[in-house]
Structure formats: structure tokens, C-alpha cells
Image 1 (cartoon, rainbow over the protein chains, first blue to last red):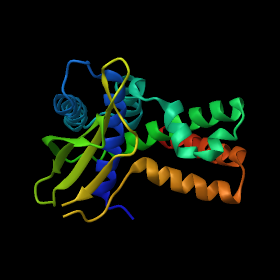
Image 2: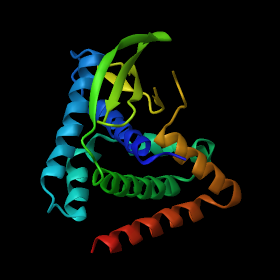
Image 3: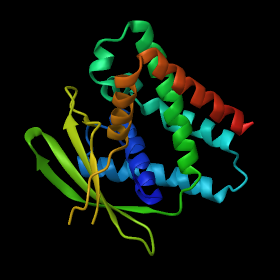
Image 4: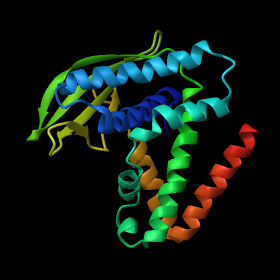
Length: 173
Length: 44
């Protein structure tokens, strides 16, 4: 079972991955990419914290505008369903993707509402298997709480930009 | 020291594989839709 902190980090990580997947300039290094995307996510969460009057509905709208466009929900759906995706009809795939998209949006809205000032430090980049894959290590910090190590595994797309795999790991350290 | 590994999507994958071993994909889709509707009602 996840603690609240780890669950938040895990959700943040999924958002970050989605942003990385869609929004990174090819010229940026993987480390710069993670730093930039992390900063954008945290800025959004701080804005939310500064606006206590922001309703959950507005938060959902914010996520729809700023986060959702960078998700590849079809890919994510295929990965979460695995062999069941391969056996699904096109109609089932569309219905599942739409429902999963809404579920994730709702989940992020609920979790973002509990953001408590965590910061992220990018530690460095390391090779990860083949030449087109790297691992970027970060630390998620919150005063008075243990640091949480989050690693992002990135791969190079055909167009030269960097994008991430969907299965990163995060670990307490 | 690595204490454990976590991943949101791995969690979902495991949860859905479990649900699909006991039911159909249409039932899982219906369950997600019900959850989403309940969330929407709570926001109003």
C-alpha cells in the first residue's frame, strides 16, 4: 500500500512522463528536459496552493488544459490492459480509453488538491541499456519527510526528440 | 538504498488484470464509467 506521499509522487511522475512525451524540444538534454517539465508541474501546483478558492471543478479544467493534451491515452490504455487490449474490439478500445482518460484526470485533480510544497532536484543522467536510452535521477523533497528517489527512463524517438517509457521506478532512499 | 519500486501505471495494470481475470472488458469499462460519474456528482 502506498503512503500519501508516495502516491502523490507516483501520480506526479505519471504527469511528468506525459508532459515529457509531448512537449520537449529535441535540442534539450534529457536532464534539462526533466528539470523543465518538473518546474512546470510544480509551478502549476503552487498556483493551485495560492488560490485556495479554486474549486475542484476548476482544478479538473486546469488539468484538462495543461496536462491532458500531453498524454497519449491510447498508448497508456494499451499498456495497462496488455493482452486484453490486443483482444479488444475497436469500440471497446475507444470506450476504455475515454473512461481511463477521465479516471486519470479525476485522480490527478484529487491528488493535486493535496500538494504540500514538494520540490524536485535533478541529480544526473546515466546510460540505461541501449544507446538511445538514458536514466535521469531526481530527488523529491519535502521538509520533515524522507526524500523520495524518482528515476525517469527516457528513450530517443525517431524524430530526434526525447520521450519516456511508461514504466519508470521510484524508490525511497 | 532502494527500499521498493512504485509505479502508478503498474498499479493500474495489476488492478485491471485482476478484474479481467474475473470479468469482462465491458464490465471493467462500465465500472470506470460509474466511478467517473460518481466523481462528477461529488464535484457539483
